[in-house]
Image (tube, rainbow, N blue to C red; front, side):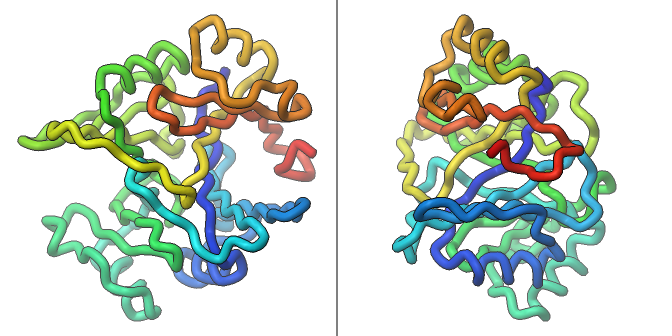
Length: 261
């Protein structure tokens, strides 16, 4: 399997308001949209994003005006060329102040979208401006989480940072392109537990062959959520040991539609 992270899915209460927020403040554009029976899905990303860069998927369910964020998911991070300038530009554009660069030691900053999803700003030279740099999830067992991504998906640890009370581990496929999105696993040493809520949906991993790769993951004892047959052979869902959902999807970057249906 390619193993590249294709997108991160988040649920929102007001889809049109969220689309407008990302288009206005992050210069995103709509890549594709699907309106199903009782739900809508929109893919967003920078206008000139590359094929290896991850998209943001926003999902809205009919009748659900609010979402519960929970704390098992942390944030998405977007790339900027100048941290201070990018943050000030967001403030000038009417985005609420959340955690400015100074409060974060000048290394990063945070804002929130209309539903309270946290968005980290990180200064990076690679990738499209505002493209997804990483998605952070919190884990209760760092050894199990690292082993899961290494054994199941053949990821490798590309960066780590350990403090007195927590540790961050960045993982991605071996030889991943520079502008691909990473996964950040955050582990707190105090033994806390986390709630998932419904504001976060899943990570999506690209596979070369849905059925072959699903069979391989099954042999590697991946916890199953929905196998290909349950998803009309268009995609599948696995879980990690703590209930984070991972979609498996074949992606033809030249296809007319981003959706497999």
